[in-house]
Image 1 (tube, rainbow, N blue to C red):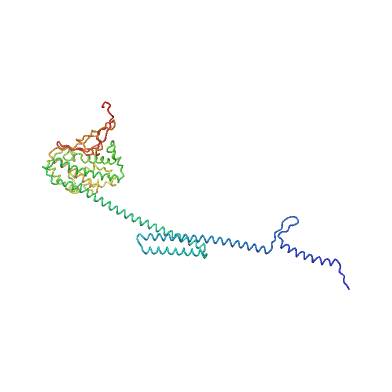
Image 2 (cartoon, helix red, strand yellow):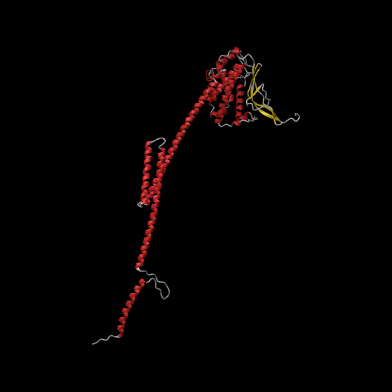
Length: 465
């Protein structure tokens, strides 16, 4: 019996198959679609195929790997440069050591420095070979750190070598300075010895054979020149001490001679020479050099003064003062030193008053300054003894300030640059500024006074044509 199916059922089965087919195709279409628009116009998320997503992931991975490779390559190049610069610094330090080992010559140090240069050049050569063949296998972090350490160590070596070189140069210069100081001291000692011979036994030996009956004013003039040499030697010593004590020599000269101007700076020494001569020769006219304060002191016979001159001429001032502190000569030494060298001056020169205290107590200071003074004082004392050994009257005279210069009684110490005459329409007159060395009168013989003169300009006289 034939079964007849209803139309509705057959239609329903056919519709189910077609719906499944459409759903399958829709899913496939959804996977392959990139975007489907909805009925209300709003966007729906993009769906990509599996093949395209994989391709993009591969491209991203490749880009990432390329960036990492590029960064690593940059780091390697930085490490390579750092290693190269460190090698150059090492070669520089080794070369500095090589130079240092030349002076003084040190074969072991030269060999070590040379070996260090060769080894570092080999290292750099090997680094170049690997770079050209692209065989570099460097860890950037480690290489940078090691290169920094190597460079700092090389710099430290370079600085140490520089310090050693400077120390060596300092030692050489100190050695030269010590040698020059030694030469200077030797020269000073020789000069002092020559000066001592000149001022002591040498010039005075010419009076060894002088007899009292042969004594005349010419002997006095000769001995006066010996005295003045000693005075000028002591003045130089005094100026040297002033300079060491940082005295203002211009101010010191103005205190002694406030109204005098010196066209030449070296003329300031004449002021000090004047001060020394006036102080040392004060009381010269008195038979006892005014040591007792009695202006009418008794004059001994010429023979007694001449015997003192002859006995003291070759004697050492130190022995004379030490053996007899109460003798006339010892009193003269003490009196003149205390008058000439003020306590403030001595303290400024030496930082104390030890020489003054020792001299007052009867001792004899053994400093070069006092020895120079004692030799000068001895000669002044001997000049006085010689003066009173003469059978003629001896007196001393000073030229007043402002007096007209006279060639009969005076001699100008400032060379021959000053002369009376006319300059333009003005009259120039030479006047005495101060006496440097007093003059002497022996009977009818006059020994010129040494003076410092200055020109005085007068306005022209209209009546004189």
